[in-house]
Length: 193
Image (cartoon, rainbow, N blue to C red; front, side, top):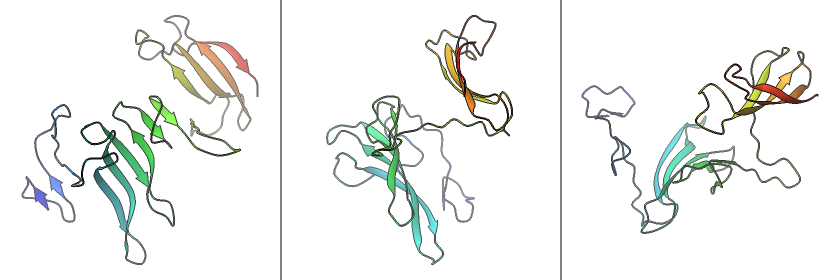
């Protein structure tokens, strides 16, 4: 199917139209609306899926643009859902109208909120990985910029996990920015493995 084009590719929907800015209300190259009455959670959805081995259509993931605060309001959220084996799609991540991102929560408290309810176990986790082969001085870190005044490639401080040798537990090191001579900062404290 081609919209705005006479040469669509087989098996695809192709829409060719001028750019539509976010800042202009109801402007997009493709709009998906719900015809339900405006209410919390109501909005357009886009399902992504395929055909299983039995030839049955299955939805694997869903993206929803929904009403966040109810009738008479226009604040919207974007939700991403995935489908586990033997069940239906469930929401996994949400971006609120304020721009907060929630993973495992539909009500993120701040800019990034990672949540996992596990009684007696580990809750929300963020994993930072260096996929290179294990070697001395391999490192992963989390950097902090306390101000936009810092040079773009410098942190104001950072925490790093550093291997001291291949296939050994890593040290945890804390760095602060000293001056313009060391973009990685100066190590202030190290907890040995």
